[in-house]
Image (cartoon, rainbow, N blue to C red; front, side):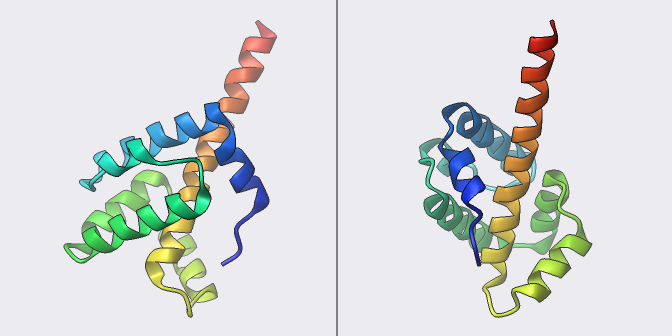
Length: 123
């Protein structure tokens, strides 16, 4: 699967990466997934992706309900999930899901950061 250059650039931003890790921790914790690995993440897309895939595989073997809880918490719909799994049907499903998770959490963080900065400029 192709990584967007913007994703890599955004992960290298110290402010955005810190917020990304906090959001990822919150989402994993509230979905009954291990999240202690997140603290040690480096702002490297490949490494982040690999570690999320590992956790998804480890937890996915236990129950799909935890995985669906996580995806719902992150705001990834079943329609979106099915679309990507179909589009990348030759990929391991956990690779596809990890990419969706990274992109969606980063999207939420960037939007919050953007509005926070605009509010402070307006004040």
